[in-house]
Image 1 (tube, rainbow, N blue to C red):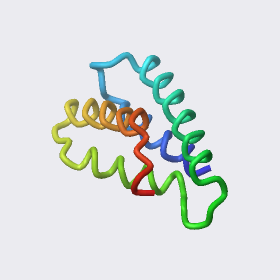
Image 2 (cartoon, one colour):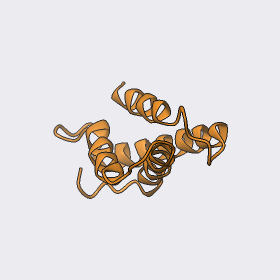
Image 3 (spheres, rainbow, N blue to C red):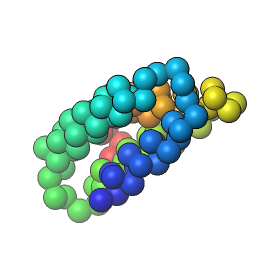
Image 4 (spheres, one colour):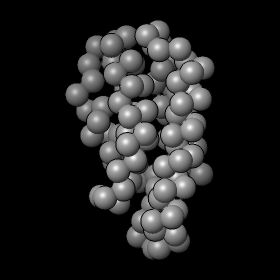
Length: 93
């Protein structure tokens, strides 16, 4: 459920962005999120103390922390958020 919230927040951040095709980005994000969630479940299963949404949100916040500007901000957030899901670094989870 929290992963849906993360994706919704990411989609909201691209409302004014124009550099990347929105439909393409949404599809890429959905695929990357699904693959990363599967990797997370494989690594942690139902282990207590490991939450996918918290892990990815923390990484995403760090990645987009230096994004600035109006249209530049939206593009920056969109690109970096997708990269976080594609890389899917679970070492800090």
